[in-house]
Figure (tube, rainbow, N blue to C red):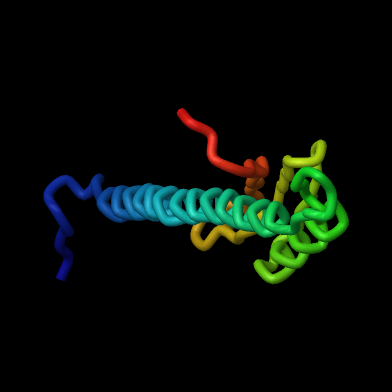
Length: 138
């Protein structure tokens, strides 16, 4: 018994190629959405950790003199302790007697786009806090 599959016999497998290409495109779009959201969360976390570390540093005050100012060694220790507790690396700078700047680095791994050879990403957050003492009218 001999018979033909389909009418023309020349379209064998064309649906399989289309489904494979559509599946690959869907996987890439899913990867962009999922891993893109992960990088946005990492950026927000980097900024949040930097802001909290700078706030912790700015609370290290030296009130022994005529004016209140930031105690430089205590501020650096406080900011680094916060960065360590958050599990990120970063740098702390005390600028002048009333300003602290913290920059940190957050690392993450791609979940889906790793199959394309991009294993991870790095996001940097920066925050600057200035000590204000007293009440200033607007």
